[in-house]
Length: 389
Length: 205
Image (cartoon, rainbow over all chains, first blue to last red; front, side, top):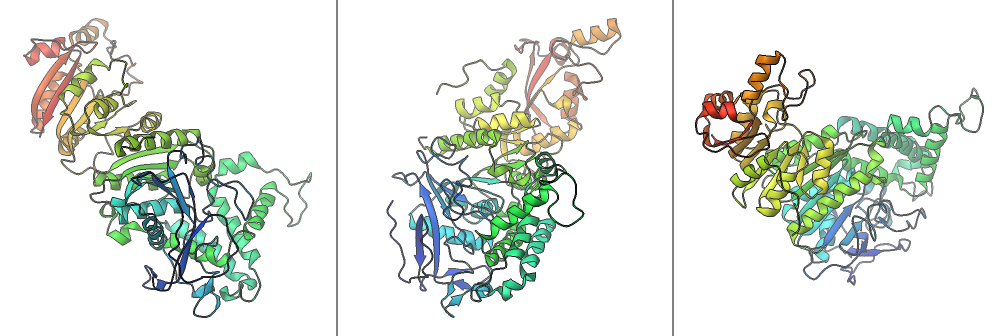
């Protein structure tokens, strides 16, 4: 499908990114949950496959906190393969031969969609902390604009893990008639106190870095790389599991025979985390990290709709909820609570817990049982939807 | 559609025959999904399942069935009353912790409940205990007393009494032999209780 941009206002000369871009000028603001408006704004996205004649085969993929729209292709910033290439692509479960696949960078992100590092038209400088605080609901509201642009009345499926799963739930709760099937993976109906606490550690690490400059580091040509790296290191631990860390590193030492009685990276696990932190700062904006973690913290369907069952009352969407046994960031108990809420409104729901010792990140990894479940669920949904797949 | 080429267990077929096409069905303890798959594809029902074993759940979902992991004792309370036309519990009542609450829940959630269960009043069970003096083991009940998941056996008469105590109406009662064939002409509970190895019951609140 050829992209006819809605744009008139040029936003900023972002680096030219692969993929597609939809721009909305000052006359088409995005209303935000905070009461503010974002205008102008842009959505950077990628698509795979072809939208069929009755526009019934579209799957929207929602990325996680530090994910992006490069689901199944080489990432232009990192040079690495797409983050969900094991699930999405020719011959995969989500196959562009069958589906029209869309994935957009979230609002507030830093890979093309409007975020805090873009130029604030009011000042001519990067937004920094003058960027409005955004929510999962705002991210989804922007995605709705994208889906409207394609003239798609109903998405065949919305799929995502972690923060992507929150977007899936938000879609299903707010726009139930536009979601035929919802697949929230490794997620919850609200961000827990523990999860908010971890995010706060990350944010404080960023803000404690003198190079953060009150959020104005772009304008002042600094980069709070140390703070952002520490934030990433702390967060990365929460994505793994103790058994996975033990299996991978144990107490093994890093290129030495004995401990050095100092604070170098004696242990392999330290070296690994330092590498995770250091490589992250090359691809992610520190302010985006603040904004997106905040959006996750604010996510609470019960607060928004009165209760979780109320959020899904009368829904006809078919749900497939997936959790992972060693995920302690979004544990199975959160998914089970979601299942109970959906049962309370007699929703059509499937729920599986996948046995894995890989922790929260398992949803991104090669998990054959997850693939089999998703394949079967999507095939069943396609039959009910009358899709030829 | 070329599905379900293998014949279904006879008691499952009897249960399936009681279900109106196009209705809403919850199969509690749906196992590998054989009944649910049949109901969805042959009778066009809106079918859901609950299964205790995670492997069973994953296999069901991978077949395209809507199934959640859960058990009859703890996961029925959330469902709203009258959410389904039929709630099925096959060969599971005897393995629940609180059969009375489970039965009440089935008839609350469903406009009808369909249950199948082994009959502990069968003559062979009685004879086994009388002559051997040990807990009965039959073809259908193969566990040792200490490792059996079946912790709440009942006889057909016990079940009828339980249903009565909950003010449930038994709409249909079938008594089956060991392989699930209906035994005809056993109108009397007494003979059914003696000669039936299992029972299939349709009931409502």
